[in-house]
Length: 444
Image (cartoon, rainbow, N blue to C red; front, side, top):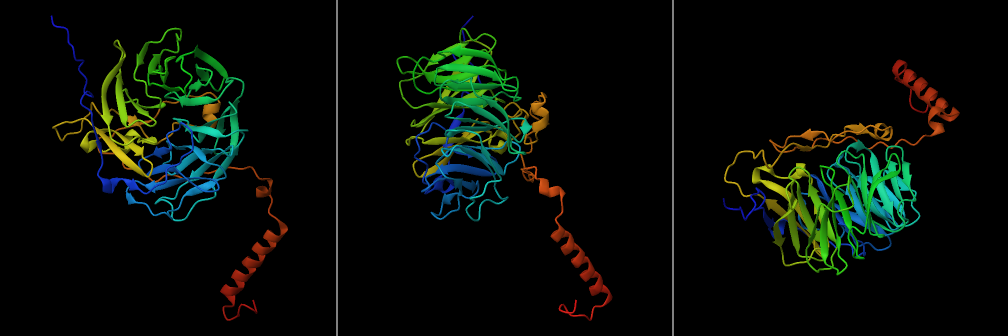
């Protein structure tokens, strides 16, 4: 019996490739603000990039096909009065995006079908509740119009965007700055990483901490924590000797990690991007020039290193395309949008296959854009798994319904006297025009 030295995996030969220059987005002044977010958000229609803006905060929204050199006068989304720190596309509507800013507000924007024609200073809704800058915004994966924001006031707020109101405020759980927040697959729990070196798993509707781990990574630099599809928690952080680490934890028993790996001594924060369909985690370090990827399985050592994609230029930020935006005909399993100082470069990850047929093993049914729950159902205690779609014939984006914000207004129910008089006058005028068409406007 020979021991197999190399573990078999269909993702062992994942091949990363940067696109040609004419397919990059050039001449973009990427934001220089010192904050460890991705600075880029992508969906099957648009790529959004936080950019430098004088006298406020702005981000650019480009249709995916609009590559090449971007005009300096290209319109931006520019309603914030302070630098934008984080942006996130709504998973249920490809034209709705949320942004958090140093001006302590969260804003939600509806981008026109074909992209921006003029700059957009007016959001659909402004969410005010934080007392310090808002560094994290993330949408609920399965409930429509539910948005989470976390600020440097150490508070997590969950909003109903449809009414513009805060549904849940988690105030006393974090004694220090929150580095990251992530929903689990059905949106029933959140996982947070905090500056006090604790990882917390929280039930937001009961407002209670279900599990926590002190000193998940002992280093003082920022940590990240994300949920995997089986409920485990994957973390990135630093050891006491400032080595970068990644860890895997089981919320049912947080005493000991399932697995911990030392990586290298670079000081860039590792941003994890997870594909729940293939169980592959991609790690992109800020300031690194590489993307490492790992497969997570049920067999020891649980986190298996696959490969590293390396380029010459360091990355300022990174956008990650949802599975439904990928080209299944080219066996593309991931696509990243890498931010340089003055451009955005798509990087395509493919699994080399000789067959032209649809590869079922690479593309199991994936989360689609339809929301199984409304905000009101979720807050009442319902949970819903993502509604899955097949990518067999490629995903064609449908027409999205507009985001409706319902603000209760007592004036809506009462028609003023003037309005009634105007309606009555118009009705009489129409009747006279039909019965006596020879009368002029002044005689009418």
